[in-house]
Image (cartoon, rainbow, N blue to C red; front, side, top):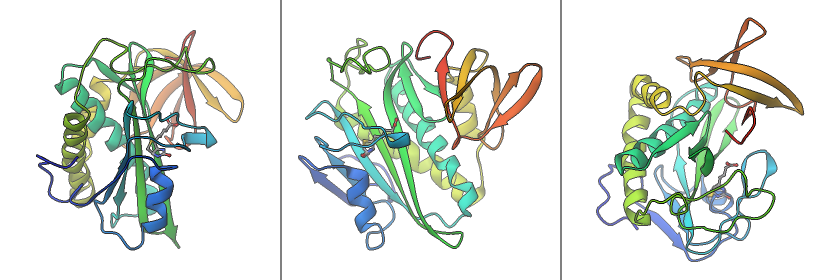
Length: 255
Ligand code: BTN
């Protein structure tokens, strides 16, 4: 990993493992001493973690399990947009390889309505100051068998009929991410990210369930606004939903 990488600083240092419990957990432990852009990647995770306390199945050689260390000098409240940038960079990289992937806002990537990639962003901050962010990305590349409880929701790039090299995809995601990330933290520029999210959205102009603390509400997705929040219509009221709050489910399927 790392050969032919065209980035300025993301992935200048790559720490590679054959196996580890979780790349996010490991990077959080060394976040204070490593430089921005350090990437940890493993061929397998024995305790891969997902959002909302869920697990992330990370079997050997079946995917990309990686985490990047970011140290942006921005206010804490501007950090959730970094997850949106990651989603945009992944969906762009995949589509540039001819893979018809879409974003299920805010941070899942789907192919044919099933999830192939999730993002887990973890923040370490003190008194409104960001010390560091660990941005974890899990992508199912080759996995063919999924456990009963996630079978209807999860798939892999290979299972959907596409082939891609793990290394090429890794390089391309880092490259796309760095460009969009630098535009955001230097110039507060979000337009390209938002355009990618709209172009490849799996939910805009669709009815979805918004799930929040066991409450489930059917809503029509209108757009993603300039803050990266989702605008939905519920019973004739237009509501803005922040990316940190909710899960989205399709009306009668995963999405
Ligand atoms: C989700 O969709 O719930 C997020 C999944 C994030 C999984 C990745 S794999 C690499 C990194 N290390 C972890 O333990 N989790 C993230």
